[in-house]
Length: 385
Image (cartoon, rainbow, N blue to C red; front, top):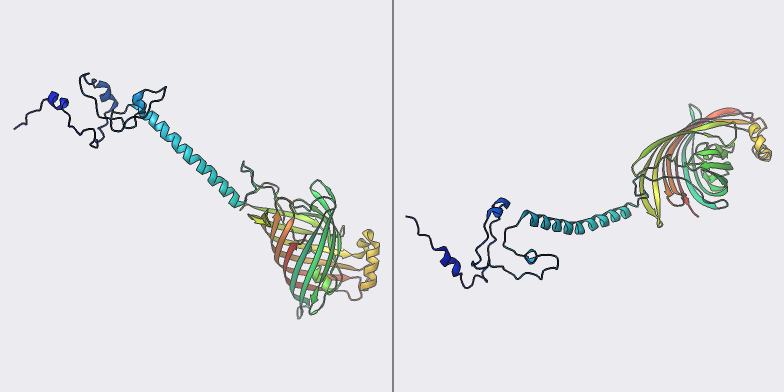
């Protein structure tokens, strides 16, 4: 049987007394088409319950738009307005969080890179003209001197060196350094004698040595401790901006300290490992793997052209002649880790682990001949001031 329909007029005319206080279920949302076709309620119909009272309307908005809990079905226009309002709220919350997070990441990374993301330009320097930098180096070399296949004489050299570098002149990317060293230590348990003579160094901002360096003294200790290719351990820097993790290779020829006396060929692979903070300053840490074929000579006749007084001193103290000549042929390899101040561009610290395998041939001396030096080398250098 069908239930009899209740009269609409009677139900609408007598709403329950507590209807305004009971929780109202949200009405079904009517599609826009259906809403457009609905006919408005007759004027005599009672008003729909409104839940909480509406907020005071703004001057330029209709009253019904300000009601927070309107039961009137939403229209597309109202949905778009509500969506735009929600989007603005989300952007006000999300965008500042992104900015703060990005700033924090940049600070923690210690990045030196410009905001354009172009990377960092690395260079090596020693300050203005007249400024002086002091370094302390500790070196250990252990190996043997081989005079013949059946004869090997082991040795151990332990040396501490204080090195002063004063900027004598600067032009463009090159700096001329007046270098002075003082070393002490032991060689096979005996007091170490001086091992090398310093000549002025011209250094480029990319870490390449243009000229100068040390000349080994013609003694066993000098041949070992002053071995060509072990006087200046410097990183070879790239000619482009780089980011942490980037790698580059640099090959170049370094003239020996005595003009027209051969070259040292540097074949290097490098990496910018990271940026870190050292004593409050930002610094770049660079790893270098180098292979240095050695083909140079200490020829007193050529040295006499630039320093006759030095040659006279060598002849007198080391029982040499004006025709004495010492040729070095072989290979120096090493792994170098350098820390460079990104603001002052000065070398702060370096560590070296390497090997030496070089043949030394002497002519114009009382006992001419040749011998081979095979040795490991470990070294730590720190900037003192």
